Length: 270
Image (cartoon, rainbow, N blue to C red; front, top):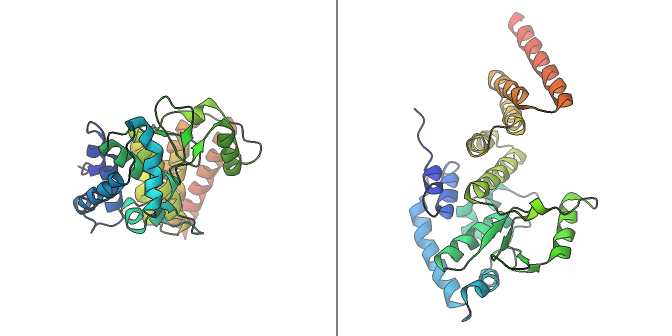
């Protein structure tokens, strides 16, 4: 029987222990990590942040919270190429550099501990934050207010000049959605770094967090291909075919499976 992931237990608590869950995900890549130690250190960060906040009502403290993190040298990681350390929360806390999602997770944890209302917004390519009922969003990297025009410009920088802003870009990202985005980020970063065993751990976590879909099985199939595991690759290709609803993609998958079968047969003959 597989061991129940510790991050899943954190996710199911009320409210979800997001930061602790993210740290347990980091443990999968750094087994020597002790989340309890990091959480004790995080209590010191909470005190530092709290000491620098103005005397305002709780909803008005969200932007000062993000600006206070900037004063404490928390910034977006602009290294190129971006490495997994930009998404692993223990390293983000240590380096004070990370992806927007990683910085948002830290801000959300601080907001929860300081009773500041703050939500994650599932904006594509750059997670944003929002105070419930506010007419603007907040950039977790610098605390800047983003109105509709700013969001449109941000989307076009991320997705290209033809990208159109849609209502779904402003949907709330819940705790499972945040861990899913984190896992996708880590999978992409580990794959880009050539660490396919680490990427496999992330891909398997994605399949636990997301409803079954063709794209996620294709992602794991690609990783198995890099690891030269043809049977596992074929399993995911078959699952992807079962879940695929696009007819042209189904044809391509059938061709891939046919080719994989012929290559396997040819290898067996020799």
